[in-house]
Image (cartoon, rainbow, N blue to C red; front, side):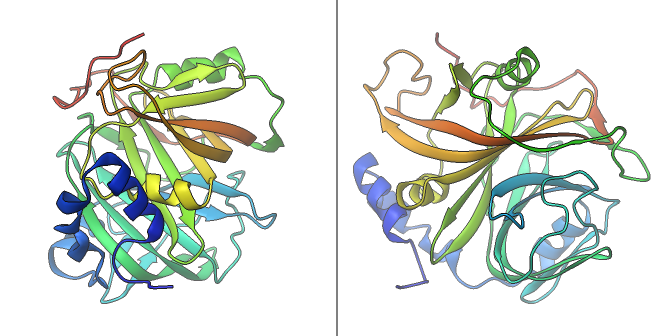
Length: 306
């Protein structure tokens, strides 16, 4: 299978959405990366990253990594992460030689950067990722906020380890999900590996529906990296962070892309696309990361329709 350019799932969704010509102009972003210059400087300034990988049971999770600026160190074709998932995190004790996806984000200036590759080292000193893809994304749907990281970057209370899904969201989980203006999405492809992306909108853009949740797919850069992965492999993971108190909800399961009537109920941006997620496992952690309640919402956010 070709490992350069868009894969079959991305091309399929681009065709269905009618944007294959627009997407083709961006294919050069997927060339082999160099984490030098501006990319290395951006990485070095961050104190928050989000990693998608598999635990020792093979379950995929998306988890935060916190560290003082400098904990992400880019090189020509490798990324050193001088921090490992914290105790109690579902990705604690990561297996080596697996595909992983990392995203780092600066909420204050609405900028994000994705790094995908193979995990070649994981120990108490941190992680080493041999990079295969690295690219930035547009600022759309990023809410502007200033996060604060405690010096020790440690959990502030005990975490609940992975548990099988019981079939119902708790009231606390519903509050975190439906109150979120941001979450992180992990997806995978059998040949291209793992990817972590950011999703944002006004609070309420993610809906719970019985034992499932879903969100409308907003117009973006037309590459459809996440949606293309889901079209090939439904394995998916989600991370919700309550930035006011550091509470984090991790969900591992599967997802599917649904095509609906454009502009119909819940189709906030009129794309006619939404993603439905089926949880299989859940975990909770609490981070030493908080922000004030003052948030400037992205001007790109569509209004949330019932």
